Image (cartoon, rainbow, N blue to C red):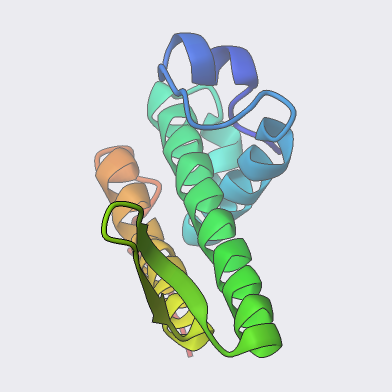
Length: 141
């Protein structure tokens, strides 16, 4: 179940990062994370604004993760072709600075990893007082 639609994203959450065409895919991923973190209990309380806001912020974060992963792949491809990537270029008193494609790819991959690490804190911030994150009475072995 997808917890937020684009209308909610644009007009209540006031999101501006995700294009309308990309929102269903990213909101689905955010909703799946909510279902995972709440062990499916969020579906019964899908109308809560906290659940919808959480879905929107998770969708924003997944957009950032996807962008970072795409950048890492492009940097690796560019680095494989030439071994170097243009980092900066100055026109007056002309100069160029190069860095290896692996450095760019590593930075982008690290950004993607940090984005993934932030998913739980996003869910916790939105869902902490809803009871959906409670593990009381459950045995995990």
